Length: 381
Image (cartoon, rainbow, N blue to C red; front, side, top):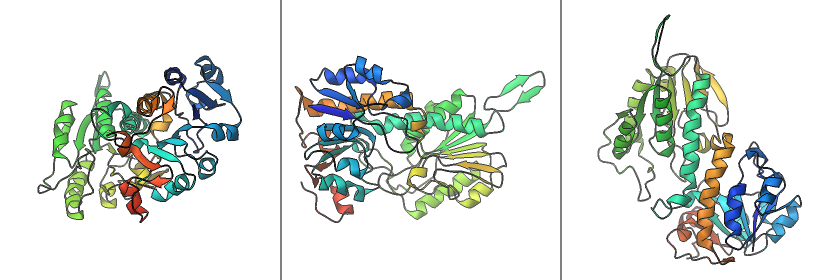
């Protein structure tokens, strides 16, 4: 059986689905690993590194696709690549099935099976496969470094012969994996940090990192689903939070927003008025940009200035740290493949409590209920 890794085609994407050290682990499971030449260049993994790990390296893109039994990817491969895969082949990667359900149709048309890494359940058994958390960890860290580069002052308090420099104040909106990593990183750099989340239960984690937790009374509204992800809130509930955020943003040097809801536009947490109330020189890093943004003045993929406030809306922060991001993703995807490959053969059990939820398309049929509903068709199971 052939497992294939291609060069990523998304502009600016430097990550790779499998780094050389994990090639060895796959080969140990009795499969062949084929890598497109240059696939690991963004992580400084050479073709020679892959060959030394036991992979076959080729520059024949089409032949690699046609022979693949399993195609591993970071981002969803383009439709013209999917069309060249043989019927029954398996695709594993970040497929955006809830955000872009129509993009699943080429997988259906080609008779493929597809697993979305962002649909891994948040269970103890699936922890090693939780690629969303892996990428969020990287992104939360990098968001703080990006803010520090743009902020016209330093983060820590310093006592010098020329006087005392007060610490920067950082406000982090959202205390999921990315938010908590941002809080931890800002604290390590010496900033005074406040964290906000609609989930009251997140307060303990925020405080454990040395930050102040901002809590707003939402009247007992359920704020997270069974999988531990934030629910989409009512406008009334969001407004309560926005008022508190606007007040605290006036005192902040940096605001980092991390709120996202799977399959929904990112919740609007900062209105234009909140940005206008911030001090000139302040910085906003909007990590919800890929699904619309948490700040009303953000422009996804761009850096803009408004009344002296710099607003950055990056689309792929994890991809700017390709070495460790690829290493973590490789570990996630290899752990998942261990559930699909037995003695060198594919054995897909949709009744498995990890495999089933992660599957979007099976043998050319939509099996995920939410994706099927978005496409206005019944799920196959």
